[in-house]
Structure formats: C-alpha cells, structure tokens
Amino acid sequence: MQTRQIRRNPTDWTAPAGAAGLSAAAAGQSLDRPGAEARIIQLEQGLYALEIGEAAASTGQLSGLPLPAIQVSAPPGERNQCVEIIASSGAGGSWVGFEGGTVIVKAPSGGGQVVVTAYGLPGELRAPPRVEIRRLDRPRPNGHATIAAAGAPTEIRTEVVLHIERLGDRRFPGEGWVGNRGHKLRIEAFSIRPIEVLEASDIEFKALGPKGRETPWVTDAKLCGTRGQGLPLTGFAARLAPHLSGQFDVVYEGSFFESGIAGPNRNGELCTSAMADDPLEAINLRLIRRVTSREASR
Image 1 (cartoon, rainbow, N blue to C red):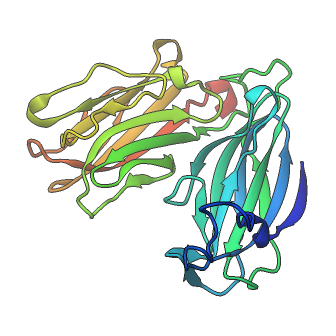
Image 2 (cartoon, rainbow, N blue to C red):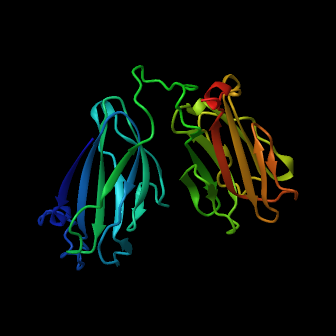
C-alpha cells in the first residue's frame, strides 16, 4: 500500500476568463475558493478500514460549507472498476468532519486508489490528514472466504442501511446501536450486508409495520420496508441462510419510541415492542461465528 501527497491549486477551479456566462466578475459576484490538501492511497484487492486523522486548521464557513471538511473518493479504475466506499462514520456518505473518522472501503481485483482530500479556509491547510490503513479481511489464494476456518473473526462486520423519516437513507457500520435512539425519528426501511467472510445473500431479514403488517424475508442487501409512505417499522427479524445456520448466530435488539429496548432476539425471532404499533428508532445487531468444540479446547 502506498500513499502520495498532492496539493490542489484552488485557482484551477475557476472558469476560463473568456467563458461566456461563467465569469464571476461579470455576474458581480466573487468566488469562494477553499484551500485543499489531498493524499492518494494505493490499495491491493481487499477490505480496509481507513482511520483518518484530524484536519488541523481553523474552523469557519465558505458559501455555507463548514470547514475544514474531509472527503474520501475513488477515481475510476480500468474497465470501470474502482474502489467501493462501503461505510463511513460521518453522516454525509464519503464525507467526515474536521475531527476525522473511519471509512470502510473495498478494493476490486487488481487493486485501486482512494483520494483523501481535506478542504479548509484559504491559507489554513498545511498538509493532508494522517491516514492509518487497517486490513479487515485476509488474502486468500482462490479469492473466496473460508467460512468456518480456524482464526476467522468471531464477530463478522456488517453494514446497515436505514431509511429514516426526514433524513432519508443513512448508511452505518454495524457496530453497536444504529439509528437515532431517544430522538424519535422513525425507521421506515432497513437492510443488512456482511462486509467480510459472508456474502450479501447469506443473511435474510424481514420487517413488521403498523397493524401487524409483515414483509417476506429479504436478502442480497435489498431495502426492506417502504420509502415516502410515512409507514414506520414496528419490528424486525434477521437470520442466516439455511446452509449457514449451524455456523453463525445473528443476535439483535430494537429501540422503540415508547417501550424502549426490546430483545435480545436471535436467528429469525421477531423483535417487537411490548406496545402495539410502537415505532422502531434504532437497531443493534451482531453477526457471530460459532466457536467449534475443537477450537474451544485449544
């Protein structure tokens, strides 16, 4: 893995002086031009966590944009293959705040690049943020996961997507509670995807809605529930595909508006409130590999 530092020239962002209709002076306006520092990171094929450090610069705003801010992006690769940005600790997809954060990325066969760019007030940034790279999977000669191999992680990392009222779709690393506990923002749909060892098709989930409405089991990280209909989820369940049910457990809790936390439930059991039609506001889900008796005796 290699990193390369570049400094972006903010003057390159302006339109050519003769470009019709694009001249800021002709429009009687000035262009706000933030400073920018970037780092290019080369990754081999695999799954990684990028631990991004703080952008050391004064805080402020340009055109309403809070600065400093940090973005992780993936330039196009050969044959339209590029690094996939799977999850971020920030609330804005591939953006994290000036304090830094964690971004989960997956590099395709042949590897790829990501660009970590810090934006700040003019003249404030002196260097791109520090980036620590942590590999989450293990290289395998055949390119496939060995599901029950000794040394595989006991807890499998996941990604959870929630469709939340007034906020829309939000993507979370499946670590602890995801959603908005205590804020009474209704979850209207959700999906679950393992990001290591297992495939998206290896986990199934379903949702409950008002008046006992129940969805079929859904897989392949498809969104389960509704968008734009104002229908909250009032319960949910998750399980492994039948061929994996003896090797893993999925354990989960739900936080509801009125009754608080329900569960833990596991392996397809319905997680619901003790009160009828109590909206779901947060989920806590863990995907755990069972330890065999041979491994436990080591």
